[in-house]
Amino acid sequence: MRHEGEQSPTFWKYTRGFWSPDGMVKTVLSESIIETYTPTRKLVFTTNVQVVAGLDPGFGGDRCVLRFAKVGTANDKVSILFGDVIHISPNAQLTEPVHYQIANRVKEECSQRGVPPDKFALDSSGEGGGLADILTREWGVVHRVEFGGSASTIPVSDEDSRLCNEAYDRKVTELWFSMRKWVVEERVGGMDIETLQEFCARMFDDSKRKISVETKTVMKQRTGKSPDLADAAVVLLDLVRKTAVLEPRATKVDKVWEKLVREADSIYHDEQIEG
Image 1 (cartoon, rainbow, N blue to C red):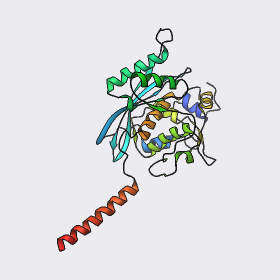
Image 2 (image 1 turned 120 degrees about the vertical axis):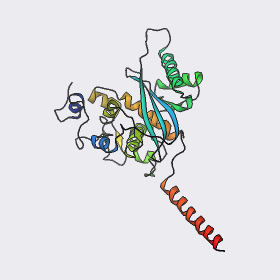
Image 3 (image 1 turned 90 degrees about the horizontal axis):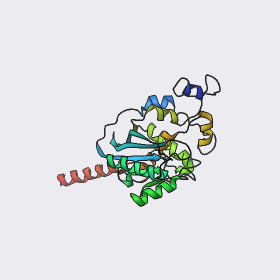
Image 4 (image 1 turned 120 degrees about the horizontal axis):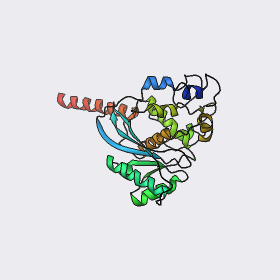
């Protein structure tokens, strides 16, 4: 495979089989982030565990990837433990249309794991919109994720109150950097090495006011591969972030307020005892 020398990201990924060292390029995830926050680790959930799913349909020659994960509270944080990865291979020679082949396989796999339609998300960009329509009609309302367009108006994270459309140049950047945020906040577990390599391969530019990840076309030309595993993962994360799969954990402001209330209650209680 063509690369730009033994210190290029392409050489590190496809010849050495690992992500490139920090400082060489700016990528969504890096070796130091992975070593520090270990998104491969197991998570022990305490409450509210549910199974969710995300799909990258992969139209246009890319892989069709269905991912499952458990979502629950771990270490007082809403967290994701990634699990099964299903590669769906539609057969264009069958009389059943490809979209229906994918839809039926999705319903089958989700049914086996107890995932209802409202806990399922897919990339509905382009032809994915037609697939989403089929699933909605034959199964139930699903969570649609559009990779194109502007970033959303939800906060970047608990610690960063900026709106996503203030921090990111477009929707796909928000999706990928939300995973970075969750990894750094130690809210991700069970992620496989191949998916991590895709996150470590996508470059970004933060030299301007808003962060911008490279386009998928540029990434595929540079690496020779589409990041379908990572795309399915960020689709799943968008479901968790936006549809209140679980009650959001208390923010720092909430916790401070709760502490003040408890202190005030204790003072009032003490006064009653003394009186």
